[in-house]
Length: 90
Image 1 (cartoon, one colour):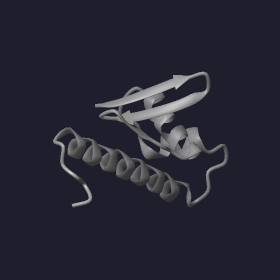
Image 2: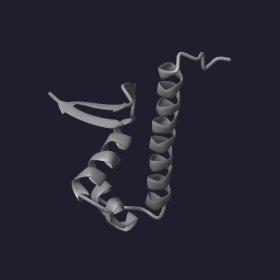
Image 3: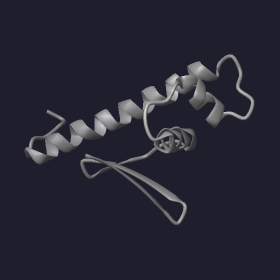
Image 4: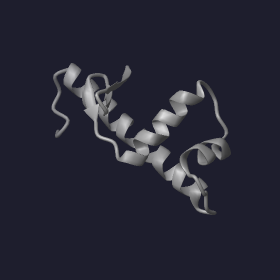
């Protein structure tokens, strides 16, 4: 389960109870996706995130999304290991 919290200017993302630390632009990407309310074209996200997009903006967006996915995936794996009482270092 993924939870998003925004209280008193603090953005909190949790996956299965594990807190995920995000960079400021990763937070902006998630908020833009949330505000879109559904599927959104990458070109629209670029417009929302950059006042004056460059040729590299689409590639940069893909990088931020990849990093977010990696962090959520890692948190999910760690949470599943702790739920079963196994040691992820083994």
